[in-house]
Length: 595
Image 1 (cartoon, rainbow, N blue to C red):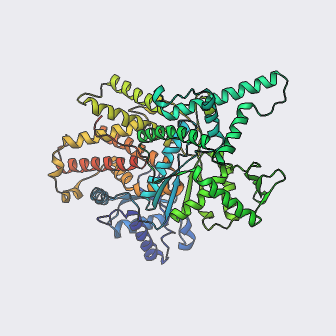
Image 2: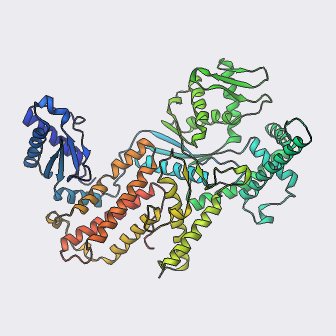
Image 3: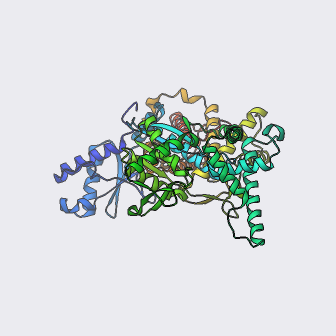
């Protein structure tokens, strides 16, 4: 910070300590001076509950609060006035302090970023399978992971964003078998179908054939066993793990199509990674760890030949780590990846952004690594989030009943285009810039809708609710930022007013509230980083935009005759615009300058 004006709360606590020492000869720690935000129905910014000090000071709550308030107003330059309500001392801050804070914010290009921390944090997110395209559920994962990484970066940590591509296993073989039987050698080039969509088509085809074969077996009175097409997938998995040349060639070809498709999707979403891991490169390392566990008698071989671990003492039961045919299960590669990641980054935190339905999986993983004596076991964390539902129920990829990510993005752009066309908000924007604007607004609406809700909550997606220039949406915040940019472009006097003229300006309650909201940004970032809650940032940005629009509607800015007041309001607008841009960047949302 250019000045220490922003340390208002610390200064207040120090002054309160001095007041208690001078009046009551009571020495208090800074932690004991617990300041709260004043309730909206009362005047003030911060409130001090005095009940904890009454006995030590031998004073009634109202008397004690009055004494402290009077001392603060007399002996400091912080307090303009105070009031006492039911044992709470409500403090009203001087306008000059708010002006000093506004100046400090305007001059600090790194405002909001917390001091540098020593810790390295690895955030794993996205983690798609190579048997289908990404869908709406993947979008929430992508947005939560990239936002959490940005927030922790702003909180001072060294961040490593990683992706784990689930490119092997029985689910991948299902798409491969279906393509082998029904694909007729079609390719993305010959069909014009995006690679991940083409492979996903055969994952759905597998499920259709599987169900048809089961129904036929039941109709013929056969015991319901393993349908032929699933038997073929199981055989293919064994061949894959043995490195069968024809199976490997098909696997590489189809995965290549999927990677090309994923790269297009990630580019459209603005998602990047520092490193991409592949399950196919980790499962053998996982098998080595399974052997280690066997040698240490932590794991055991069952009668059927499968290798398992007993986690009954942790309330997790038995978990198979290798099938009886020797093939790896999903957790096998996670064992290997954990060691690999620690070797790469020596992380202090390893955060897995994965849906809450996988809670058991991660409890098992963390318990196993602890039993194996890994030094990083306690640093591993599961960041769960709720599923995203369609209006008619949960998404099921194998049935093709999904909101496809690529199609959804196209739909969102189309919705924005229609909305803006109807509302005549595109005059003077060239076609190429207009297309970019439509995409920026569409992605902002989509990301904000999925991030504004607390991650753990299950949610229902409604595209029509996500795009509203006057609702609780990312579009509303984007519009507010564009409004500020337009205002600043029109204003020429802001550079002509010296900052020294500001202290004489009298601020309205709404202007004080706006500056206080700007002042809170570092605390909001710290809260979001500590709780792993991007929704905290989303709600903060939304409330700031709402307050600014109320201010914009109630007070003249360019038409203000008093030059100092006009300059303060313009500077306040600039700071709001900058903080909105910083806040939304933490959600990986871009704010346009023109709409």
